Length: 126
Image 1: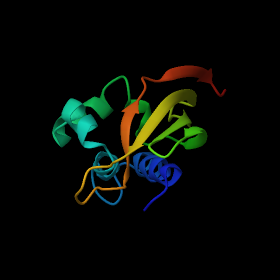
Image 2 (image 1 turned 60 degrees about the vertical axis):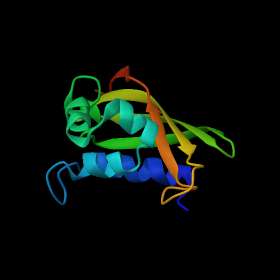
Image 3 (image 1 turned 45 degrees about the horizontal axis):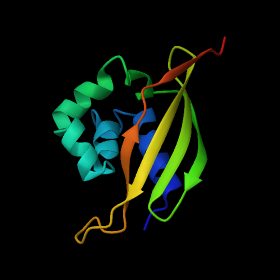
């Protein structure tokens, strides 16, 4: 299985180049790693796209750089601090939480995103 840090890294790399190889591919890739409980709150995919393109999360799309710091890791929960530098050269911080899926089926033992906090602006890099 993919480790929690790698899941966050895949999501952020995809969001960084959102429209490669196709339009909104990064958003779709991020959606694939969303926990089913999270998908109930943020989905379906078209609604998730609108949410990510909205004021609260748009800075994740096509950001310039990111840094991931692991804050907590248990057998079932992983918590990370994610810092991004957006296109307007402003830094933002997010809390990014994953849980290991425990039910039987295709997703069993996969690490999936259960929550991403609203961004906290850390100010401009200029």
